[in-house]
Length: 415
Image (spheres, rainbow, N blue to C red):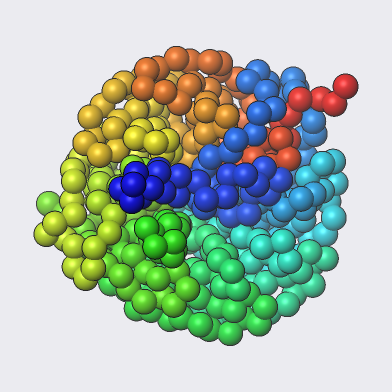
């Protein structure tokens, strides 16, 4: 009976918050899974059809929107790089509620990155956002009226491609994986005051952008799972104490971890890669104590999986879309490929699963919808008519997609 309960817990734990369809409080939504159980997102839309509102964007950025109730938060930059912004938009109407400005300067980024790629996080009381001024990064907390509550200077940020890190919230903690070239630390701050609660050193290689997630253990406690080039580490989510760690081993130079990890069927899967086309996925069995490197690797793949787009898990399946637009379904425990299908566009945004369908958005703005099953079936292909590099959000039975020129709110019109 205990084994049955544990198996059930492992299967449901990645989707800890899926009952909340009103809010999308962090990068990739509830617990970073990229999953929504909303039943009312239309499967057919365009840049005019089933668009509830469309907000022109004069500013630029690749960060994702986050939503709490009727508050949508968006991070952006002036095209010339001299200002960064945090804006609050009415999620029902697209009306701008307030906009905060931060002095900044232009700086070098990867061609597919931006000066404003860090996605905010919110707990319903405050919104937390990383601002890069071109040299340094700082974590800000604002209330829902736009007043600054606290600010934490985090020092210089050094990376080949610029930042793209996103904070998360757990209870009274704001957690931030500050991983950059030559320096890395896992930080936790009091959400009300900004007081530092953890400052845990981690091994640094090349700047990594993956966002941590939580997993429920058999005893009901939460572990925080962090994946970077250094490997995968489990921490006690309340105390920051290390439970176990797996050290990543590369055949050549260490690769960069951009995509966020996923958990499926008792396995954590993490991807890494680089611009030259090298790829490396590891599938590591959850659990254990201390160094689990010799024992917990189930399988690895050095060829087929994504670099930037994060994966989706469902029961024993993992669904992925590679940077070049190859959609795949594999078994989490073994890596066995069940199907693969070529899409018509490269992909940077992470896909979502909405009501058992995968929504994958190409860089050209085409949205591919296919079923999240062990056999491939294309449901629909829609076009927004402009490039998309930002991962979408789902809340209040609406799909929010940040394009190059517009923020789209997609939904079924109220009759």
